Length: 440
Image (cartoon, rainbow, N blue to C red; front, top):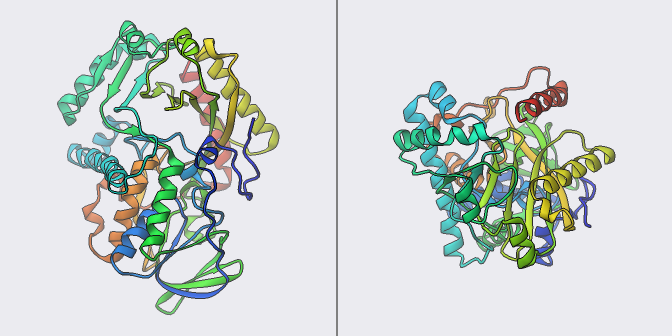
């Protein structure tokens, strides 16, 4: 079984790495350089912004501490779906109003369409499957609320969600002892995230954008009208800067980031390919993206090569013992939820960072009191679509094509610091204990 390597290493041990073969290594920045725009982070956000800026004729570089796809963009579960906040629709309406909640949903759907359009234009085979996603009730009382939720979605947003009872789940090949009903949402699809991010990087290179790998930003300061980003063996001067590190951001580059993000862990395993007999024994033959109704949710899907992907939330500390315990909990959950596959070995298991913010929503916009610096961060575990569109939007902000008012209010509030940020992991530990009780 392959496991994640050290955080400052290269190999993650993920199925996605194995599925794409050799990954292109961009060269390291050595010496002094000048660009119109410098971007920190070579994931979906940074590369989407770089592509937009390069297409507009600007010189742009992307500074990446490791390599393209090393962070969350190459480690996630491959769910291209709605997301970007941990607030419920009712909470969004209460806080921002109905019209802003509708604007935010439209933004999420535009984000999914952005990825869909790219796959089509680039003729990219990214192992796409699944028509929408299904939320599975892990308790009967959760299923009892699905009818009201489906009615709310249709009346409020025009979303045609379908409620599936236990028998309908089995007929659809969604069998398991903890699935008491489902709510099928019609938007989104699954893909191979590494194939997508590598194709995105190739488009940036083709347009003349420069990607510098193994080039962490170590210092961030203003020099006259420009910003100077110091790196290990050189520096970049640029008039404008975009922060696109998400949960892998360094909190001192710049200092504004300090205490504003909360990286949490998500663990993923992928089994060996399953036989027809094994699939039928479990009663799971569907290729729908799926997640359960727990706060500390599980997410899973049957891949095109009939491997099962299974992800969990709940890790806090990245010590060897903690990671071992997190993997063990994930495997125990898998065996309980899919008992017919308890004997099936996992060929790959790894973890990565999900990025949370104090206000429980992403931020796309200007960095306060830092003229010419912009950020797009904190996708709350659903970043493939959200970061793809938000990368374009933050580039448009830098270009002056749009203003902050053109974005939904949900993602327009600058990130606030957590109170006593040094205690963030303790907050998280307490929250996980509480969530574990609520999920029972």
